[in-house]
Length: 352
Image (cartoon, rainbow, N blue to C red; front, side, top):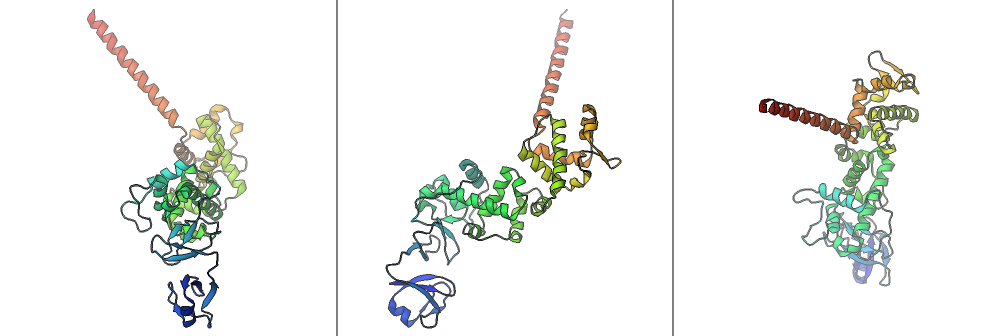
């Protein structure tokens, strides 16, 4: 037996020497294959290093190189991705998320009911095998030692592909980036970015946009923000959080809130370089360094569209919530003390 490659679709299949001489049909595209007309490509003899894997989905025989470093194979017949059983070790760079965070994200967003994109899940499957099957990867149970390294490699490659496509993707919070990577990893696009191809932004819009807080956020992911304008808005946000919440905000949250100001179209409200306080009444800006501490706080507590936008985003980042809880608790304690005091005085008065 020797192996024959179809020049039209690249499918490889085993055949006897007699059948190749007489001509045979390609098992994938049905092209009539012959040696003399060039329809048959490279022939691998019986001492070839090729071995064959069977697709767990359609049982098609796929020729593979044992030394191929990739841990997964794309079936040319059904286009499903499955694990290369000859691999028992995978050295990859880990993603920005730990194993538990990724597994929780996959499980939380698991499709309900029967889904044609996922492999059949059995009751005895490990958590890692179930996760790979939910991503649409077949044959994970055959090489269990690859499961978690393979999941990490998928998310690492998805993360890098989104960085390539979207200039402002790194500004998003870690949990939002993880959601986008998961959305990308469980689609047919996995067949592209994992195997060295490149995704097209236009193909991803409908899939990624629902994972974000509205279409304006997605549009700004693709937008190249002006550096000088970004730094001005960033300075405003930094001063805002320092005055209102009395903290020096960390870089990740600072960049994200700044990005959300651009998404809301509020960057135009901060007009002059180095000026951070905005008067919505007369459309003027002035540096808060010119003001007293009380005056600075007045600027940022003032009700206007810009400050409302920042406060809203800060709340999503966990800023200000503790302050509100503490105030509520103080009010409740004071109220309780007052009630107890009134009751005590009432009892003492009537006891006499």
